[in-house]
Image (cartoon, rainbow, N blue to C red; front, side, top):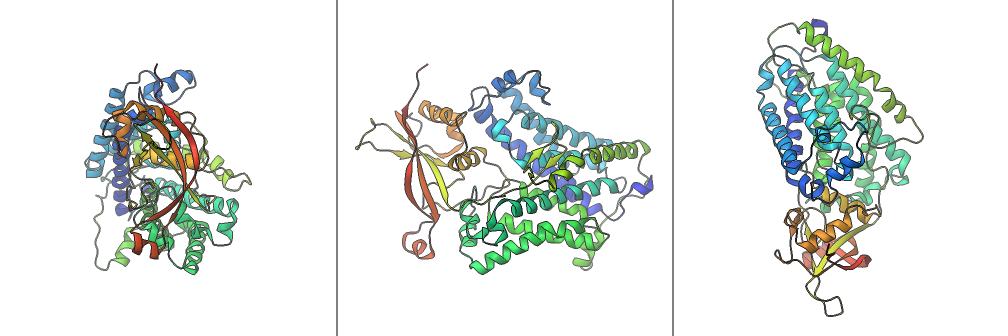
Length: 476
């Protein structure tokens, strides 16, 4: 079965296996830290209620038989431990079945979480991580070269991710077509990072050049991932550079980090040796791929090719779907992001008071960890860690329905719920429940350079009304 081996891609395999495992490690830690408060037994959208409503629908999750916050944490920390072993490369040093079982365990555990995560796990990069982890299971171990078909399935994944994102932009909003999207994007993106202010203030001609470069990187370059070397390696390098630029300019959980890792599937050892003069890369022993493993790889390849039809058809559909899964296992997916760009930024600010509502009431703001609040606070870097509540607050400010979880959040704050408060940056009442809370809407914009020098502020905001008038605790 030597024909299955992709000689000269050992570095690519190491990056894929260890890198994908590192993202799983972050994802499981995030679940252990946030899931109980968001979706636990007493969360904003309790998973047990969701499981009761969806009984009999065949949702692929371990929690179908039992859910408790303790069991959720056990699942998350088990996944984190296995992921850490893969990051260290320990399973990969054994026979190919060992890393295969380890990655399939990560896939199954995380699928169990995503499947009951509801709107808090409704992001395209959840499917991306699941699909990447499933493919990584069949990269083999250090005993033989990685299978060529699996490397090409990784390239097909990168192609869908990038080409799909490029098409959704061209179809979705004229600002991508007239090259003005970055006049707004850095200021209105879900969660700006410390560099976003600087990116926003770059000259407008450079913004147009960035958008043009993005179209080239997403609509032209991915086609060359399937070419022979060194063309495929050059295409991968362009993808990696553009993704690093996006990582520098915003917080997008692990989306761009994972895309960088996946692009290494097209980077051969010879590409790196050409870039890094004198570099040498170790290769695995010249052992043939075990017949049983080759049969498994070929079966998985055929399965994934069978599932490729729906995502392929979606790419060329007038009604292209963005971030959609065509099966419940999240192994046949459509990707894409920011098909439309908002031109202005609204933020929902939650306030509480110990007084009775009125002109003399003193209202104090709750600060979130990642989303803008205090105009004088510099945006922070959180990615690849995913602040799920902060992201949902961004969608809420865009007009998305928060009817299922936002009123519950306000009641949790009125109760002084410690788990909920742990999701926030500050509690203005230091553990004492407020008597009333309300939700205001502000229009935010980045400060100008002159305003930054004069007032030390990163944002300038003005009131834009109320989302929720003052409410008080509901006594059962």
